[in-house]
Length: 269
Ligand code: MG
Image 1 (cartoon, rainbow, N blue to C red):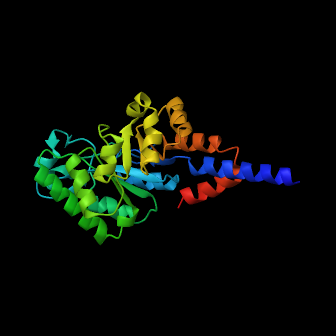
Image 2: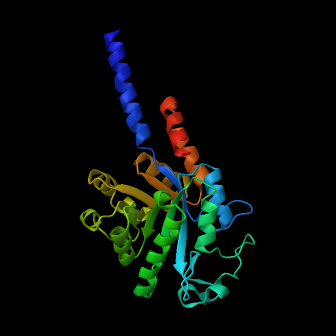
Image 3: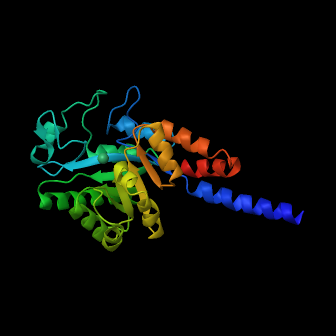
């Protein structure tokens, strides 16, 4: 009986450790690869929330007249966002019929959801304008009561510094060229690197986690790659296929059904 109990406890501990390490799913530019949606649209945010993603990622720019807008590329239909007027940018249509959203509209939609906001500030050519974008973004998130649900990501070393200086929120660097020591020294919550960086240096994932930081990996879409990073116990997976990622994570949890059920509940917030 004693031996059985010991084995049970060992199995339980191993099981909990496995489940605790399962990655959380972040929908890249929202859940957009589905009818009626589009990248960075209000619908994509709503849908990422509706399928129980941990987070929904989106991209933010500041127009020349200081309006924050949500869009991936630096330009839309030939208009460069950071040097254009908001009136022109906000007329542009997304493939699902919505127009380019202001950050204000996007955050109003976010108030109706529970998903984490994975806020990417794009690197602006004018660094003073970029710093202004950081300040205006933080003021808006605070005013809307959404700071506690927001994590920042950026390719810009200036924006990394600005967010860390001005908030206690997690800030992740995207560009893949900071070593573990530099990430730590800058005060980053971790690395949010392209999957190729981690495939080239597989020890880096554990190295970052051992240094007390977290690992997010982008943009992982193929089944074999998703499974690779689930098995590598990264903290977050950013993907264009959140349903597939969720399915694979659930399947890899099969050995611990009880704990997984618990994890799924907390994953839905
Ligand atoms: Mg992005």
